[in-house]
Amino acid sequence: MDDRDEVDRLIFAIEQIALCAELIRDGSAGKARAALILLDSLVDGMTYRRLDLLYTASTAGWTRGTGRTYPKSVRNTARMSLPTRIQLVSETTGYEPYLSQNSPLLEPDEAEVLAVAHEYRNSAYHQDTHNEAVVGDIAAALLLVAGRMVVRSQSKWSVSASRSQVTQLAVFGVEIEGGMIPLREAAETAVASIINGVTNDVLQVRERLADDLESRLEELRQTLEFVKPGRGDLDEMVRNYRGAELFGSDDELIRRQSELWELVSTRTADGDTTVTREAIREAQASVFARMEELQARVPSLSVETSLAEVEAAATTVRAAGSAASMWMAYREADKNLTELERLSTTAALDLDDAINQESDRRRGK
Image 1 (cartoon, rainbow, N blue to C red):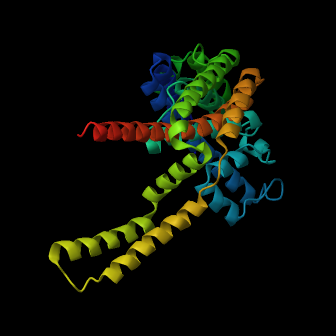
Image 2: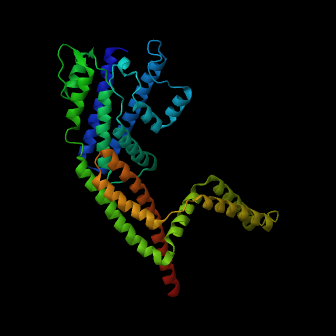
Image 3: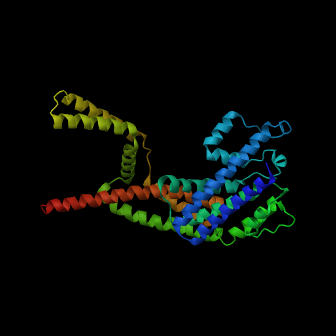
């Protein structure tokens, strides 16, 4: 590859880091969410790039046998699985000296932060949802990891650069003399100038995350107190609502319901006597059988145990000694809490609707 292509690649990565830093500095959840999605894409591109280099090194005649191998099965899994790609680029492979790179692309703690950030990115990108309380902090954490990855992706050698490239890098505080750019040093200088003042102190972030869990937990308990008198067993209520969500997303159940509806509507609207009552009963039985099958798949859950786990997670987050341990503890609790919030809110709305309907009935409406 031409030296200037390597410089262009560096400039491209630095400009993306700078754009995302500006979005995070803005302070709005929407822009932080955009930064999270953009950073995840940049990180993914760097993992693929590193894997391509490792695959090439593992099969080259001058490096064969000096590092780990990457059979076809591993490569296929890596292509489809981000966790696998993260694992592979976090390993010391033995090829680093041949790639002019002295370390893996990711440290273990960074890999854990990246995995958590990717889950939040998926929620934003695929489900159009985000946790407004933390999206800025997780975007800032990912910015720090992505910046380090940009630095580690660079060769330790100096390469030639055009005047235009020198001018572009000077914007980020990179001073170059003689037209030769030390890629690793240039990346370090640029990234440091960009992320300065953006990344948040772990001590401050962990207090915000722990406060978020505790305040949401208190609100959830209040909602459950409202729901419980009308719903009885909370564990059974949660299981039933989980089942209802599964019903709405099951293609086979939807197909059977459509067949039943077609039979019923044909008989009632068209007076078609070829559609027998027996056929309708069989279709109904098929729908109920599928619903029972799906309900059996719904895992049981102890609401009180889940609440206690979230409370314990808040304590763990508040005492976390690293960004990785903090985010891993928070993310698991956040997922559990979010599901319980969603289900309990639905139950509360259903109960409120039932109360209103009963009130209307008694008033003769």
